[in-house]
Image (cartoon, rainbow, N blue to C red):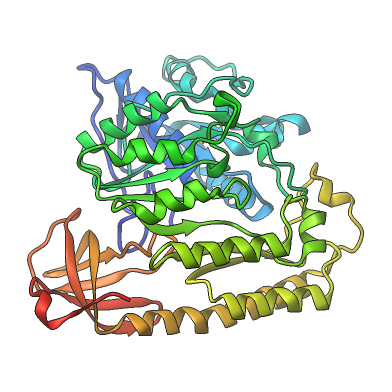
Length: 480
């Protein structure tokens, strides 16, 4: 990974530095910011950036020469923790060389390690540590650092019983799309997952707060709103006594200025017929559903404590395919979960082959200390996990290439993300979420990021598509 402050997800390389002036007239200090992990973490980063900016701190594009660096970390699995430690160490090396005065570490990694003696015990040169729910106090530790206080601080706050407000962020996504977090935490008890230990129990953001934030984002130029949570379909249960994602979506559809509403992190339980109908009938909620399934074998799902079996999963996918026109399904699977037999993996392989998900990711099982899966029997060698992952990904590559090939000759609406050369642009169809899915290379007109234009698809380039802007509907077929 390229270590840069503020990663702009729309850039060609995936990392371009940004900078922003302090809101107040007097600059207290200059800082760089590095955000790691998922879109939910990115929302937290944008909230901290907004707080620092309002308090007079100026965001700069390079850590070298800054007063301090903030790193918002990921602690989900060992590979993400290793990446977070590597970034922290690089910034500590910069500090040791006199390139910055201090390093503040925030987010999931310190939260995950709090019970193990804390991150400061492992990396004592860090100046201050802020847990996931201490994010609103980031300015306090920044004030201490630039004020010359030498005593290290660890700010941890208990998981909130009410949703935190994410308004007045300093956004680091391109102006035309934004993530909107509709809840925090998770009540699921999946045996492989450590998220509840870091993010706490599920807390719904009140509908009025979500709608207010959505309007603020649209006023700031957002055309695509991406709803995220740990468990999106559970929205409302703790606050209203029932799931209310369908009702929330009906309200969000009425926000003027939105072209696309994209749904991520949909847990298969609570995917009601009402929710399917709302998606199917909407002209704004795009038929792209990110629904992590993790496995299809019922015995494996039971050991994972997913509370859904293979038959229910197949039934749900059938209903989604039947009732939502042109639906694109994205999912993820885990290979090598403890006890997974050759026969159970073969069932998963056949399921992938038969279901033909348009978008799919595969992860090997990661042994996470403190999770119930650690105590399960039948842990598999890494080479077995990886071989099974590679087999699924090879199969999925064929499926994805075939899907892309079928798009050639059709006209698709493309949301332009950036210009990558003179008259050459990168955009996405409704079937592509930022950063994780394919893109479309577009030529044929002068465009701006945020433009939503019809594009005739001319060819496939691996997973991606290549097309030309087409304002004449007579010569191109509509997408299947």
